[in-house]
Amino acid sequence: MNHSAFHFAFVSNSLPVARIVHDYAATRRLPVEIRLASMEEALPVARALLAEGTDVILGGGGTGKLLRRHLRRPVVTVARSHLDILEALLKAREHTDYIACTCYGAPPPWPALFAKLLNIRLLPVTFTTTQELTSGISQAVDQGVGCVVGGGICAEIAQAQGCRGEVVTPGGEALERALDEALNIARSQQQDREQTAWLRGVLESLHEGIVGVDAEGRTATSNRAAEALLEDLFDSSGGHGLTQSLGLAKALKTGCGEEGIIRRLNGQELVINTRPILVDGKPRGALAAFAPAARLRDLTRRLKNSGRRGLIARHSLDSLLGASPAMRELRLQAARFANADAALHIHGESGTGKEVLAHALHQAGSRGKGPFVALNCGALPESLLESELFGYDEGAFTGARRGGKEGLFELAQDGSVFLDEIADISPAVQIRLLRVLETGEIFRLGGDRPIAVNARVISSSWKNLVDEVRAGRFRADLYYRLSLLRLQTPPLRKRPEDIPLLARHLLARMNMAHKELSPHALNLLKGYAWPGNVRELDALLRRYSLLSDGAQCDEALLEKLLDDLRATQGLLAPAEQPAGKSAGLPQGRGTLKERLESLEREIIRAELETCGRHRGRAARNLGISANTLWRKMKSGPR
Image 1: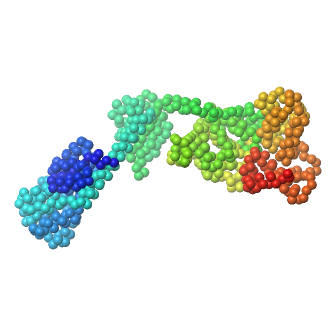
Image 2 (image 1 turned 45 degrees about the vertical axis):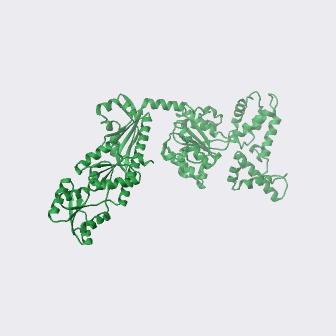
Image 3 (image 1 turned 90 degrees about the horizontal axis):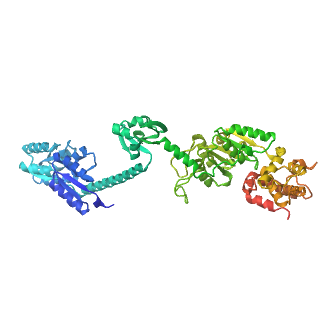
């Protein structure tokens, strides 16, 4: 920072001291304006200098103390050290052993010590005005002092009365300290001015009105938007009376702010947020931010309709196909729970339609016109999962998007968040999710302010969360928060009567409605266990549609495809379990070791199907590593 940009002025009644200050400042290339003035003139002179743009006033001796006492701006006193005073007393002792020393204000403690140290008589002369100084020196001369030690004006008064005067001049250390302090004050004031300019720019750039009051309720700041919105109130009260109207009096009294206050002021409905300005925990002022309610409603409507067209539910309750008692009961409960805002948990095997049910719950409920955001928690690592759920601020981590990113809870404002495979989230994410459910607030990664969110949480898992809680892998308090309402999706093997309807629907969705399925073919489908549920049925019908020719049912092809499924998965449908055989035990010949290895592979294949071919998840469930799982699968007969 260029020091020459600052303007300093030294106000004093002592010409010798003023010259010393001026010359020393010149060696540091600091321009200091000199103004000689009596103590009575010093205050108006200093005020005029400040009005003309002087950054810092410096004052010498008693003048400096006077200015510090009465000016509201910082004043630097060029204080003379005890060493400077001692040096002047030594010079005076060369001429007399009876010396008067001048002191502004109350007498200091050092005269008695210096008198004893120098073996002299020392008479303090205290003063606060020029008249008191002149009178005090006159009385000292009458008492026989031989020299008066003090500032330049003191020496002049003493000499005018026929007495010797010795000027106490500030040394280099005192001058350096004073100029450094003046520079620091000037720099701080410059930073304050820059910060104020920035804040003023921010205030004026806001569309919301801003009004700030001090601890007494007097208007301290406002922006043009506030003056435009409350023009009549500003004009009628000169800025007063706004404290009560905007709810600032309550913020000052309680030290707590309020959000979303709706009041009618100046002929329009305003939404007002208030907050106290706390210093050391005590209210020292308060701020109100406000905007027309009509403008906020329009903005909210436009935000909801822009950029979020993809965040919609694609399924309704009619998508839950099936006439079985289990499906009728599921639709009935889903319709009852749809309008509730409470968190809801869906439990069911993989492929039973948990996500379809989540879509249907959102669409049928009061939040149906809001966004629907879905996330598979088991598909993301912990760090990425947190940023997706809660968002992040700019600079939160290397590679963070400029300007930050909204999390799914923010995207789902006034809608629903569907968290699939909730059992797979880490303990750290469980804690953050619990806080959202308890407080309705999130903190972005790298953020330092809470963000209010309003989204219904729907979760699902093929794992039993009660078992996960008992095993210590899932927090009990989070489980209770997530499962205030519960739904269970039935497996396909427990509702075989729904298979014909589902098969026709799936074929129609593939544009293969012309491919008929005979009663025998449907019985074949009903007789299979369907460990992959509706998802597995869908995959089978896709293969059948691609391999079959024409519209006529190819029962042999369908039977072969089902046999392939059984051979691949090592599972027999309950209806086709051979009599007298132990379910799940490998048949055929071989040693005990070979049969055990075969049984291991069957168990691994079954677990892989249950986990949707996800090796890592299957390995975790079986308590082995992914490498061990892969090795055991590869060790089978070639």
